[in-house]
Length: 241
Image (cartoon, rainbow, N blue to C red):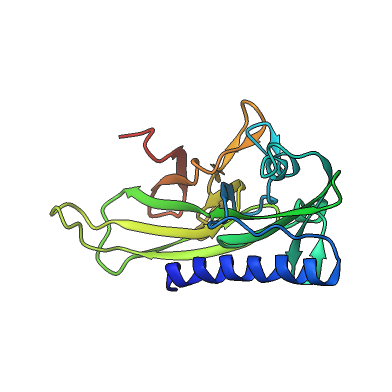
């Protein structure tokens, strides 16, 4: 997009709206500013779009667009079904980075209307669980099936032994990506006995019962023997050397 042309279009459109309102005797619409303000927040996949950020509601943020004006304010956002309330926005669970277009009109005490637009950008982080089989010597081509479960889904990944680029024994590794926040259990279902499952947390902070998008990766490590048994442990990436 040619940004300079876009800003010129906005100024021209604002002036035309103002002139039209004056000509027909309707409410005066004040021209938009040259640039729309941008408000940004990051959520974990599966979370709803926040209506309060750093102690401030979206409505309070929109109100700041009219710092020296008084009057009654209406605010909304444009969704797939058209004009929707901010409460409706709080039920949105975006699956990818999404820009929500917020609008507000201040019905001023002097009978004129002031307008403001705000782009509310919600960035979405998804989780990754990396799984590694270690312990016993494996031959190239050997494989282990890993299973990942949560309350709502079950996924499988088969890891094939690959040569270690550092010259060590072949490695068994698998990766589960694009996961929403939650508690997961990883296990090795194949073998003579059901192995112990390893619990992995993505985004979940049990200490204060919150969701943190920074906690988007975890590792499950298994010592798998030739009978199919596995003893595992999990940790957040960066916590274990």
